[in-house]
Amino acid sequence: MSEYRLEVLFTPGDIESAVARLAREINRDYRDKNPLLLGVLKGCFVFMADLVRALDMPLETEFVSLSSYGPGRTQSTGTIEVIQGLRKPVRGRHVVVVEDIVDTGTTVDFTIRYLRRRRPASVRVCALFDKSSRRRVDVPIDYRGFKVPDCFLVGYGLDYDERFRYFPGLYCLKKDV
Ligand code: 5GP
Ligand code: MG
Image (cartoon, rainbow, N blue to C red; front, side, top):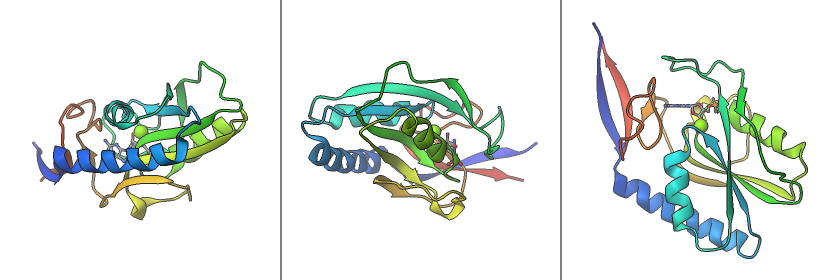
């Protein structure tokens, strides 16, 4: 039977500093624009909650639920399923897509296209973690928290088959064989 080990990559304090920096950048760029922060569920919810509370301006929030993983998998399937789409119009809005992690780029690419068809005034991407070595689709990341190594990450909203999402730090999941 295989066992798992978690190796710390970022402490809650590291993450808090990065979120504060991202919030400063977004505050500076969106003051007076009443941006719509669009979270991509489920992974974003912890980051989104901390980010909006660090922002200091009028803003609105919305969520879409997308999935590219089946249960128990650690590899993206490459096909995106819209589990819950937008429920309010984004036409003319300044949208900031909030992602936990950009891996192959498939999800962000899909999200940007999905939004653009609905004619927003602008679309930018804020991602806390960037696993850039795995990129297959070139996507813009306008606000980036951390670059991360190519390992399976859990904690701070990221799960492994629904486990570890609630851990406050970020960990690399290592399988002992
Ligand atoms: P992409 O479409 O860029 O390949 O993957 C994006 C989604 O895959 C992320 O929003 C996240 O839900 C999931 N994902 C990618 N890398 C990891 C990882 O290391 N750990 C976890 N738990 N999810 C990941
Ligand atoms: Mg995600």
